[in-house]
Image (cartoon, rainbow, N blue to C red):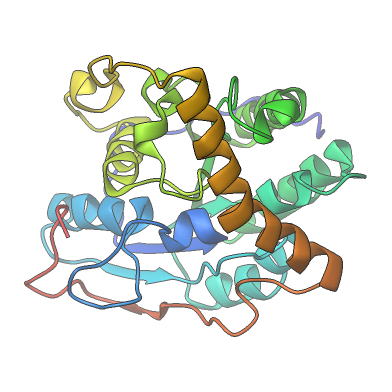
Length: 275
């Protein structure tokens, strides 16, 4: 990590040129867009709606994120494209797919993220980062809890050194509920994305109803052992096995996908936080 002096980000700023870069999380899977079959909304789009209202309409937004992308792409072509748009705010969430690799180098991931933050800050952009969620108790991903914890600590350290904002998903207890996750148990539902967008708005220093996005859902009756085993087996067949096959073949779900919003554009009148 850099040994630069600690910087504190300004609270409650208003931005006018927001660019989001990242992977499937920022693309918005599995927050389906009712207006565009096969497309997704997601937390970044929802955050853009809030920021546009704060900017009084003088606002433009681009989303360059693509599912399956590794950090090398997020801080490579995506970052280059983002800088060319001259944004005043960039959300950068990457490294999650890299952490899934057996030989993931968490220190190298942190160094790569920090170098990207330095580039963005030197260009005059504010930066919004996000920690991973806490996978405690989650099938398969629960085994990576230690990696996620280290990655979260690294993100906070980078943010402290360079004056970045951070969406603290690790501390969102509500996201430990499987009802916040889609059938693949990897991507959030619309409710999960809605809550993360409000968390992000709060992290940027704007007032939100914290209880609206941080309070867990009411308890539900847990599945019995047999039902739970059947659900886990169905998930493994439908989602885990295809993911493993793609890893073995060196392919990605995003190989044929391009950025959904590659240019800075104003939000039209039909855009709203509730899309």
